[in-house]
Image (cartoon, rainbow, N blue to C red; front, side):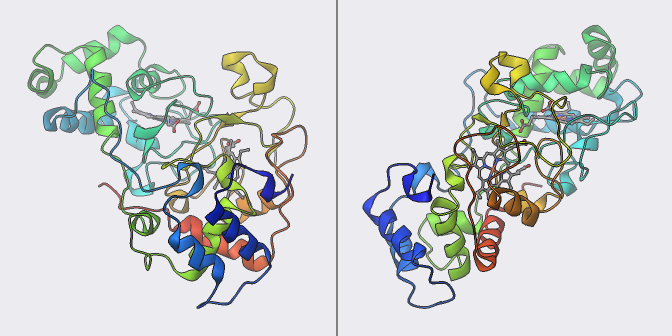
Length: 344
Ligand code: HEC
Ligand code: HEC
């Protein structure tokens, strides 16, 4: 499969592709592909600036609720041994990741998956690498109760622990007008997480009309992203994810007995070793990549895709890219334009 065969391409994009595929790089001023890109009203695949995040009708954002959610997020008293909070793994100073290849739980065991960033998780259509939770509300209590994460011994113990903290009795009443309960705790955590959005990246400014917001090299990277490198087949929409699950072939260190991914949820053989397409916004702020943290830089990620993904069965959307070194560099600088304004 070649880049030209993917997605219905508009006339403007076709022009961009033709120009970029003619192999001309390093002509800063009068590159026709860049000129064509600058005149495109819309990018393919719904790529564009981040809109405001969707807020579910059952959980409107209020300042009191968000503040309560922030406190809960940072509170180590909510773990079995009172030593771990959500922020232990989703550290605000590390783009809400833990900076590790694989997460380490409260009991000291290494988990089998990497801690994803929570930046822009508000836009996720499913949560977790295998999508086993739908909403942030549904997700929030799971790590609190998981043995290998925060390790609270049960719902009742968690409720009692929170009820014993006088300030929470007041703050839950302020936020929800009723006594402490676990669904409200999940609502508060989710409301806080919905504030962790990163608008106004250089890419967003470019997309909202400031054609100077990207350099020519970054624009060439964008042209590759939607064209020859075909990343936007899967990383599309304003949050650079199709919210689907794909199998990329084996990652370094992954083998036939590894994590089955989406298959464990659907039992559909097509989902074996498939994982959720992550957002690429703020990827440049991360130190590890992929569900198992097996790639340690964006350069390694680009090499992985340049090779057509890993070995073994994989998505038909992957193919050898044969990017020149200059093109890999262009793609890398483009990915870095997706880091927006950090929330806190
Ligand atoms: C021990 C480290 C650890 C702690 C503590 C932790 N998480 Fe996570 N978090 C992870 C890992 C690892 C995953 C991915 C797990 C998976 O996909 O199966 C994850 C996934 C998530 C996701 C899904 C994000 C996505 O893009 O799919 C959300 C949301 C989340 N955590 C929120 C929280 C909240 C809220 C808390 C506290 C109540 C918390 N986490 C505590 C490690 C942790
Ligand atoms: C077939 C769909 C597909 C295509 C095409 C694709 N990706 Fe991905 N991408 C994914 C999936 C799925 C993952 C997660 C895989 C995993 O964790 O095992 C991922 C992970 C990533 C990550 C790691 C993000 C993180 O937080 O761990 C980066 C960076 C990335 N892709 C960039 C790219 C670039 C650049 C291209 C184009 C060269 C591209 N992708 C093409 C589906 C795709």
